[in-house]
Amino acid sequence: MKKLYFGSNLKMYKGIQDTEKYLKKLEENTKNINREEMELFIIPSYTSLPEAVSCCDSQMIKLGAQNMCWEDQGQFTGEISPCMLEELGIKLVMIGHSERRHVFGESDIEENRKVKSALRHGIRPLLCIGETAEEKKYGISGEILRQQLKIGFYEIDPEECKNIWVAYEPVWSIGVNGTPATAEYVQKMHMEIKKALREIFGDNAEQIPVLYGGSVNPGNADQLILQPAIDGLFVGRAAWDADAFDKLIRQAIHTYKRNKNY
Ligand code: PGA
Image (cartoon, rainbow, N blue to C red; front, side):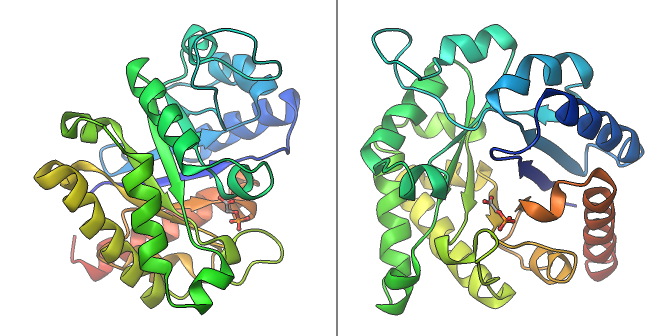
């Protein structure tokens, strides 16, 4: 079966102790889920990363950072360098999360600089893309996603595809005020994304998993995971309790296997 990806961005929640407790519990709960079938990753706050690295087994849970600067060092007050992430052994970084783009005003050009820098440092970029409600209203979702991908991956060698993940997170579906996207809509957008990735990278694009995020919950996870163009789920609120996340993952894998006759 294809590998399924499950991950969560803890955003600006959970301090050091809560992150440790959460990770230990999640690792224990999920220890008998075969990692050949599933990739599990968690993206905690920066301040929790050192303790997170020492409290969980990287074979079981991959840890990522929520953002990083494209420069290695310099006069960039408040930024975190890829070298600092490397120092901690962090091998994954989320780039261009909707909140970075829309609350902090990051542009596609900046995301491209970060993608390039991450790859240069051997850190896997998880590029997040998604259209706003207004862009969806005007029927330009596909164009927006294409643009975010074409700029975000500008001048990236197709050989790097094996080191890249993408998450589709429509802005209108994220967070407490978000409206969950239907599985059919997500499948359609993932097809657009995969087509654009093929245009950019050629056949190597097949190696890039495309995850869906935005109000994923126990009620819609099963339908989403069954869509052929969805390779995994990037979960926010519904994943921040280790028991609940473990349950959601198990149920989704079970549904997937039952429907695909594994
Ligand atoms: P949500 O967050 O699941 O709470 O909507 C998703 C995200 O921001 O990645």
